[in-house]
View 1 (tube, rainbow, N blue to C red):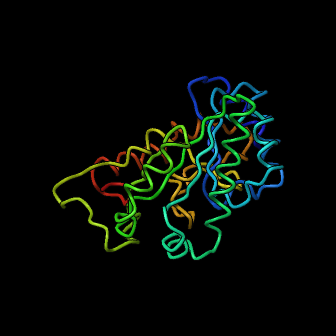
View 2: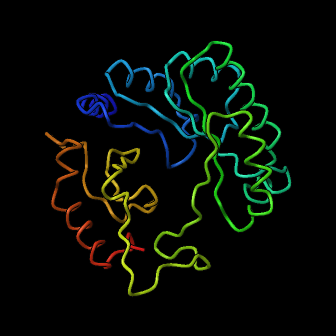
Length: 232
C-alpha cells in the first residue's frame, strides 16, 4: 500500500509526503525504510513529525542516511516543569539532548535535512513563548507555533467563529490523510474514523480518485456552507 502511495505521489513533484498522526512515527519498525523507498520512488519532499523521545544516535544516522527532507520536532515547552505538565512524561532532558545531537550530526554531515522545532500555542505556553523561540531559533532551521484549536468542539474552552462567519477548513483542499489501514480521512484529527472519504485498498483505487470523489466533494460543499465540524 505504501509503495503504491509513493508511486502515485511521485507523479506530482510538488506534493509532500508527511509521516504524522496516529502516534509517534519513529515507533514504526520500517520507518526509515519507508523514507528511503519514497525518495527512490521520486517523491518530491518527504517529511516527518516526531516527539524526539526515540531520536537516539542510531535512528539519527538511519534517518539522515534515508534522505529525509524535513524533520519537525514537537517540543512544546521551554521548561521541564511545563513539558511534564503538558505531556505527562519526564522526557524533557532526553528530548532536548536528542534534538541537539540530531542537529549536531546533521551539521557534521552537511546533510540537506532541515529541522523544525514546534510548539502548540496554548494558553499554558504563553509565559514561556519568548524564551522557547529564542532558545530554538539559535539551533533549529525554523521554529513554528502550531495554533491551539478544537475539532468538533472537543475543546470547549477554545473560541470558535461567530455563527454568522463561515470559515471552511483549508485542509480539505490541501491535505490527504491516509490512516494505518489505508482508509482516507477527511481530516487527520478524525481519530474516531467518523469522516472516511475513501479506501486505497480497493481495486483500482487511487489518491486522485478519492480526492475528486463524491464523498470528499460532499464534505467540502458542506464545509463551505457551514454545515460541518470542518468549518470554523
